[in-house]
Image (cartoon, rainbow, N blue to C red; front, side):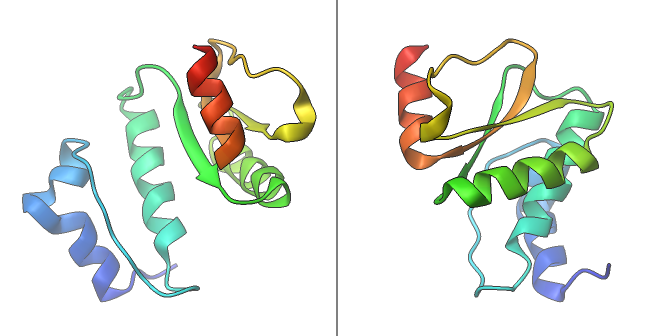
Amino acid sequence: TTLHPWQIECLRSGGGDCWLNGASLVYSAPTGGGKTLVAELLLLRRILFGAVDGTVLWLVPLKALANEVSAKLSSLLENLAVVQAFHGDDGGAKLSPKVKVAVTTYEKANAILNAQ
């Protein structure tokens, strides 16, 4: 996979703070523009360097997308982190301390955050 120039610029923004120091990042691109790849790279870096203290919430709009992204991230992060999908069909809103990446719909994320 080759990065688009905007993706490289995005990762270098703020002197590389988002890549090097885990600073916050807001970016926008059209559908199919590669936003997910940037998020996956940043997530992978933080997991590899032990910078995830707690659980990462990866928000998606649909249950089917939560399942799809969860499966993809589970494959990407195999043996590095526990990834789990959360959506309206799975009952409770409690996160296990073992879960490092929770892929969830917006509504379920609200329930998870309010249950903590």
